[in-house]
Length: 299
Ligand code: GUN
Image (cartoon, rainbow, N blue to C red; front, side):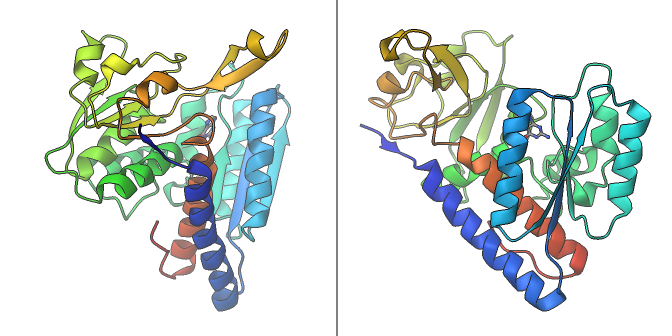
């Protein structure tokens, strides 16, 4: 039976490091790290995520601010807010919650955020630094950065000789995850919806990372015996066994069968999920340290 990674515990230790660094920054410079989250519209899932980010930022000792704009906000209004936050020296990190309402151009907004304040790691400057192997100069996309902590805790920093397969090629996760694994010397395959014989590709993986958004797609016979399996999916499915109309969360990996084959596996919920917010806090304190001229902690 595989060892189950406790994402909550790992996230808590990241948060401890963030709190220490935040306190030290305030003592040395008299400034709290400032995180501003921008939410446009009333998407309930986004409201929940943004509230959780705000709560955690306060717990870390940050100046936490939220701008909530109506769904009818124009591109010009949103760009003007980003410009204002870029110029505000008390704001060290800016996050525009996605998805934005359809009439807005998300990419233009994301690219307008100063790269040094882009705590989502989505600007072309930060993506480019990662792609060129500069892991210390930019800011990393939070979910892949969190998943990579699990990989490093399991295999160390040098993945030489190991095959890694990432299922999914999004800018938010799949591409940066593949780049991180490559920067740590893994031999990386980025698989996606057009990949031929996905199960066979996955069976070659010493490290298998699933981020497709399809409930329990990865089956036991896709997993190489002894592999490390990281499940990034969060899917809500019907759970009639819990009562009428009930639902539950599952990942992209069929956990119960895969844990019999893998040697290390992450659960859903309680695996990668808690790491995303923790790494957002890590990015914010890192951004604040750099902007104030102190050395950021290592994560
Ligand atoms: N919506 C869902 N995940 C994310 C994320 O990581 N960053 C932002 N900005 N929006 C999201």
